[in-house]
Image (cartoon, rainbow over all chains, first blue to last red; front, side):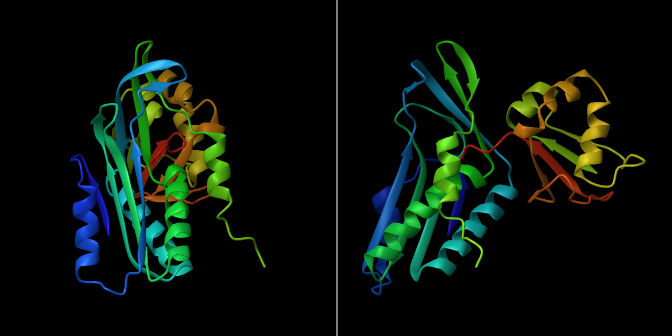
Length: 152
Length: 83
């Protein structure tokens, strides 16, 4: 399930909804991304997320399908917010549910790693030193690359 | 065709989208970018360093040699920073 929205989300409410009617779920993993108040030693007043409506949903659906193909998952939820957010605000929620922990933990890490580099979002920080576009990090590329399947 | 710009590419070009007729000689992403670079200062400055430009054709990630046609939706943007 994919949701792209400006509104906040309720983590326990989302998890309760997911598990309520599916008792095949033996465990779930949850990643929550938050707005930090410091970046490169600059204090952040706010973070504005821009996205590509339409493509964002398509890309996230593709990521969910890829995760479901790689691991036996009972359910997947990705909520990604856009718009202006304040330090401490929730940005993204990834929940992966499976019968067993390994599939759940691995697919959750996979989804957040790929989301960083494959979901069409761009972050603009409003810092004390002025507005600054967040650059893609090499570490994020490396984290995403470790899930690339090597050719047989 | 519809051209969309996001992130600092949008900020540098100064508009978020524009409608253009498929220019003569433009057949793929590379030739479109060549054409855009010749159009004016803001476009050429925004598209100066192609190592930090990503392209989507009809909302799918594309490469320099991806073919494009008159009705396509082409988006140009910096590397994505989701999550």
